[in-house]
Image (tube, rainbow, N blue to C red):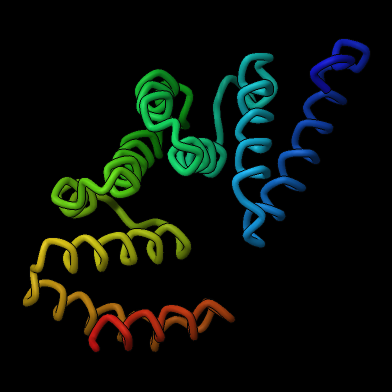
Length: 185
C-alpha cells in the first residue's frame, strides 16, 4: 500500500487500508504486540494522510478512538495528544463533545494521570454499551489508584448492577464480573 497505493482508485485504496487495519487490529487484540500495534497505527496514519478515513468530511468516533489508543499503547503519547486536538473537528457534530471528552479521559488514563479521568467522565454522556463499559473500567482503575475507596465501592456496586441488568453484553460479562470480584479483594 505504501509503495503502490497510487495504482488503486481512492475507494479501492480505502478498502485495502481498512482490510489491512482490521487484520492488524485482530492480531493486536490477540496479544501480538507491539508489531501489529505499530503496523495498525502506521496504516491509520497513511490512511489519514491520504484522506481515506473521512466519510462526507467526517471521521467515525470508533476510528478516532482506535487511533488514539493505538498511539498511546505504541508509546506515542505526544502524537496522540496532537491527534486528539487537531482531528476533533472531523468528528460528527452531534457526538463531537462527548467523543472528545471520552478520548481525552483515555489519553490521561493511558498516561497514568488517573486524577484527571473522573472529571472528564462525570460530564460524559454514556451513549453506547462498549463505551459505557470502557468508561466504567477506566473509572474503576482510577479510583483504585487514587485510593478513593468509598467512591470505588459505590462504582463497584453500580457496575455490578449494570452488568446484571444488561443482557446484551455477552462473553464480556464474565470478564467484567471477575474484574469487580478481584478489585473488591
